[in-house]
Each structure stands twice: as structure tokens, then as C-alpha cells.
Amino acid sequence: MRKTSKFLLIPVLLASLLLLATPTLADPAATITPNTGLMPVTPGGTPSGVAVQGWLEQTPAVGTSYTVDWAGLNASTTYMLVIIADAQTVTLGSTTAQITAKSIDMYSHEAPYQKVGSGVIVAAADMSGGNPQGGGQQGGPPAEARGMWVSTNAIEWNIEPSEMDSTGKPKSFKMTISGPSGVAGFFKWYWPKALMDKMGITANNLAGYIDNDQVSMNTTTYADGSALITFTLTYSQHVIKTGKALPLSLATSKKRVKKNTKVKLFGWYSNSKSVSSRSAKVVSIFRKLKGQKKYTLIGKAKTGAKGFFTKRIPVKKTASFIAKALKGKKVISSPVKTVSVK
Image (cartoon, rainbow, N blue to C red; front, side, top):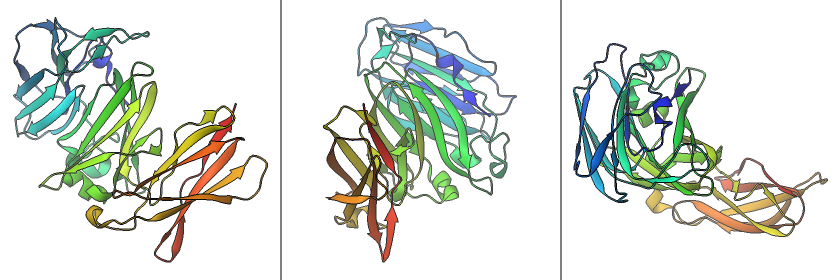
């Protein structure tokens, strides 16, 4: 079932808290500190079962630190937080939640996007669900997702149905996001340890994807075993996914170019279980030009300390690329990526 954040399709947004709750959820209350210079905001398009409270700063002050405190939450409910802001910390109690975040540039919803300042808006939504293995219905997040949160400066977002394996266990989580074309964006996704354990993922092989391409990112691990991944992007509309890393990934900086344009190929590979113990590995890059039947080795790349590699290739003719590497005695391959020439 598609969960759509209709209440976020408004001119100004900063932070929102989504509550995966029971239909009988009472409206919780939120307070913000500091509230000097803020005026109340009442978003339109709020779906039923969603409590929304928001503030807009009359004079833009990007980087202002805010604390949002929620009270009156349901102790037996699974929570998922979505923060349209630069989140610093999110602390979830049995009946309370606290978000600390910094304000960011905000834009109008309608294109052409107009810069409108900075502010804070928070919401508690009834998004009852859960997959059959997690005690819910309709393919929503399982109970182990309690406390998951996302931080971004995207103008709009939709939570997409989870990808499931044959047993009904989630393999990944997805969102569609959009923002002002050409504007630099950021995305943070926090994973509780219980959810990673359920899905057979560790902090070492938790990965972020943009439009189904695994991307370079930073991973922060915490003492309780949870993890936060952070990556950047340039806006139009993108599908963001988090899940288990591919054994060997490959992506291209551009999918369509003018003749003789250099394209960056990038990916991730490591046959080590520990990030700290990874040494450089060699990845072979193969190319097949349009009209050819076989791939030809055109270069090699070495991985960095975290397993990422890059290689710049001039593209003169539409071509497909694939990366290969040794994992033990076995040769593994990346997905095939194609770059077309205009």
C-alpha cells in the first residue's frame, strides 16, 4: 500500500515526525524551543488521522538550532520519523520523542521553486501497517523499524512499498523525493539495530541507492549497533532506497552525453568483513561498444579504505560497462550500466 505524505506538499517545511500508529491514536502535542520570531503554520492537504503543528521563521536564519519535543505518544506503537531538516539527534522514548535539528533553506512546492526562508513543521500521522511477519498489514514497516528516521531537504516525498523476499521479510525501504532542479540535496537514513538484524544487514553492508544505483556515502555507527548513512544528490525527482549492499556495484555519473565526454564510473566492492581492515582491492572495468558482441577490458581501479572506487572513461560511442573482481577464487560481476551518445 502506498503511503503518501500529502501534508508535506506545502510552501515551507523543516521537520516532520511520522507516527506508525493504531487508528485510535489520540493527537499528541509538540512544543518547539526556541520559538522566538516564529509564527504558527497550518499546512493544507492534511490527511485524516494526522496531527500537524508547525512554525515558520519570519526572518530566514539558516542553521538555527531547534528542539522539538513530543508528548502523549502511544507506548505500544511503532514509530518512523521523517525530518525535513538537518537532523542532529532523534531520541525516542515510550511516550515521548525529541528531535534536535538545524533549519535549512526552504522552497515553495510549485515549480519554479522559490526560496521562502526557513522554519519548522512537525506532524504525527496514523500510518497503520506492517508486513505480515511484523505484526501489521499492507506491507508497511515491521515493529523492528521503531525509531527509524530520515533527514532531508527534499520538498516532497512519498514512502514507497517495501521490497520483500519470498517469506514476506522486507529487503529494503524506498522513498520518492523531489526538490528544486539543480539544487544540492542531502539525505540521511537511520536504521535501528533490531531492523538490521531482522533483515540480515550490518553497518558494514548497509547501502544507499539513488534511482537504483548504489552510491558513495558515509556511515556512522553507534554503540547500540544502529547505523546512520548519509549521502548527497542533485535534485529533480529521485527514488531513494536503503538496503543491503551489492557484492560489487557500478554506476555512471551520466547516462546520456555528447561525444568524447568523460564519464565517471563509480562503485563499491570489498571482500572484507571489517571496514577498518579493508585494504585496496583491484576492480577491472570492461566495455562493450554499440554493435559489438563481447566486452573488452579497458582499465582497472583500486578501492579506497571504505571499498569505493572511481574511474573516468571518455565516451565516443554508446557503450555498456561492467565491473568484475575476485571474491576468493570466484569472479563476481556488477550490474551492467549503459551510457548513450547524443
